[in-house]
Length: 148
Image 1 (cartoon, rainbow, N blue to C red):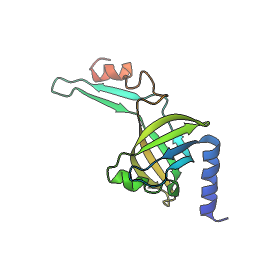
Image 2: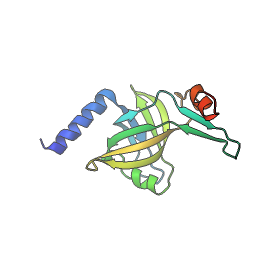
Image 3: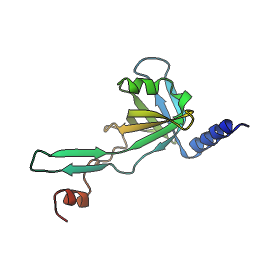
Image 4: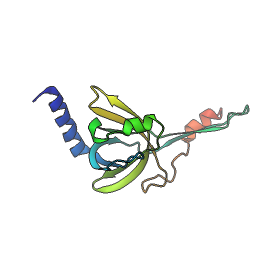
């Protein structure tokens, strides 16, 4: 077994043991990709930061970083579609049940290009969305407001 084959086998074993499955239908057409094993990193809670300010800086920053890692050949055309500005959506399932739908923000090749890493944003109407998603941590809110 070559090193590349060993790497692929190790990824498959990790994805089967600890991972989830992902499905995707390209916005550009083509056959759907159904229930492919992936590694999926999901934060337990979104981080929201309010940035109050007197000189027009009344902004809200919401940050949740969902990351999917998969074989690059499993999602053909995903990177090209995202790079050209297409809105692509992945559906994630864990233990056989859908746990969320995500917008694909970016896709990059990892290592020798046999894997992809996709950065995802939660679509808020998914069943697992946290009711307090986007609420700032009180300590961070106080810090940004100038109180300690």
